[in-house]
Image 1 (tube, each protein chain N blue to C red):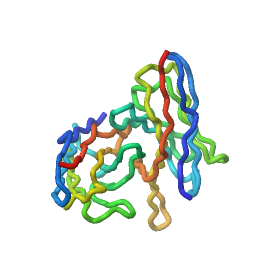
Image 2 (cartoon, each protein chain N blue to C red):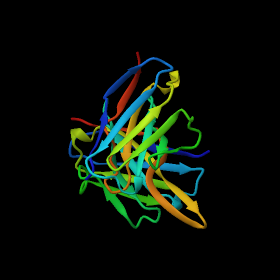
Image 3 (cartoon, chains in turn brown, orange):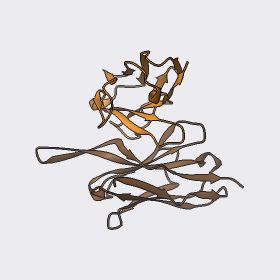
Image 4 (cartoon, rainbow over the protein chains, first blue to last red):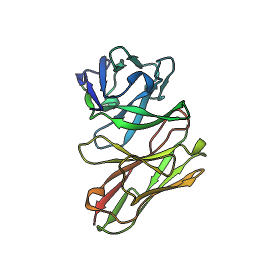
Length: 127
Length: 108
């Protein structure tokens, strides 16, 4: 089954750290860029970070740059997000999202829209 | 950074009516890299439109996307009961790959 399953969320104090994981199955993980998108309670979607299939390129929203680190282990089909210096405003459900890959004529191109999402893991930052 | 503004915030419709959702970008979206997602309560978002007007796999043809440059539209020709949800646009031409604030389509 093609799916993404997040884990690692929980309650953490301001200034604390947490590592989120996203286990992928049912597709060739290393071929796809991957992302983290968060949603604060009752709010809209916020793209947080993205990483290329090889892991060589990473991208971050300004709101998390310098505090969050995205990484991946293609041998384990797993995406990670290390969260540090957490603030109350980081409280949200964190979803992982698979970037689309379109292949024509033997050439494949990765696009940063998300054709598969996980259900998310809740991170609550509170004292 | 491209800022996406969606309107209206809430759209109240009866089943069978036409829904027109707007997404306006603060600068031109490169390569027509504009997507739309649907999110129902308690669920993850799901892709419905990419490349401005291409429907994702399994998406009904009552959903259509249009637009160019800075102005984009998602149209639901006749809203079905399962279409009541929140809809988000997203630009994916340049990082950060941000979303609009969303439009809630609710039952009138």
